[in-house]
Image (cartoon, rainbow, N blue to C red; front, side, top):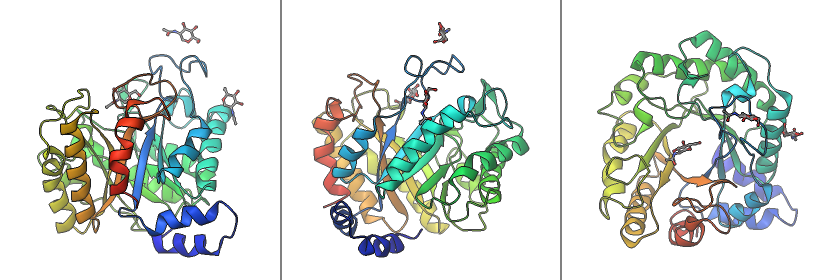
Length: 335
Ligand SMILES: *[C@@H]1O[C@H](CO)[C@@H](O)[C@H](O)[C@H]1NC(C)=O
Ligand SMILES: *[C@@H]1O[C@H](CO)[C@@H](O)[C@H](O)[C@H]1NC(C)=O
Ligand SMILES: CC(=O)N[C@H]1CO[C@H](CO)[C@@H](O)[C@@H]1O
């Protein structure tokens, strides 16, 4: 659904909670303010694992807390092997699908986007996926239950890496074709690149030259890139390289988006709770706002009930980023 259509639809809704949601939408500086929900992909060494022991779904109460802060996209991490145990083309596990559907319906029922995101790095049961036909079938089967929900976004896979570039192209194209074959024609799809889909390496990795040729008959692709601000760009250190590293790392990808008339979103970003990182975040988000003709927004890594005191946790209300980062960045998304 086009953004202006959502505004029109929201304006017609008169329930008590709809009004503030609509106000927030009207004052958005970036279309998407997102967070990653992480936990349903935990225990990846153990399939299928036990719910509540190896893995966990997300606390729906926190969805309301995030929406109150202006968040309007929830990137839902989960594992392919738990949704279709044993095989790419196997049937959907009703309980895992039930949890995913419950999350999606709750989020989209509040007017926010739910991103369906297999956190699989282009692998299934530890092996690089080479069966592109099977991958297309997987996506047709997974998209089918959501085909009528326009607030669902399909993320082809989390962070392909160390893979043949042509295979990464073919898997993305298979996912797009699979989603559309399910009759899901109105939803956005976010292709991801090789090399952990880094924005800073989008050109140097070869992603730009390769993925520019992806085709979507619905023309609703939003290229998803990830960007961390530490020395190696891995998102494992609390320190940021400089107060301008975020915008610097976005420049080449921004030019690629503009040159090729593509749209992009930062599907993961994070930095530690310290002055230099906060300055870098604000600088980078300002840059995204200045280039909102091509950038849809950004999604913080990460929320989820099991992160504890993890440096980037934005889980309400105990995560370090909930208190130390969110108040400092939300005005770059909503006012
Ligand atoms: C896998 O999960 C089962 C069920 O919770 C548990 O009993 C087992 O110890 C786990 N194995 C590993 C290797 O974590
Ligand atoms: C979520 O998964 C758990 C564990 O498999 C199951 O007991 C529960 O019924 C599922 N919830 C839904 C809504 O399907
Ligand atoms: C950057 C980051 O924190 N990545 C983590 C994403 O979540 C997986 C588990 O789901 C971790 O293994 C990564 O380190």
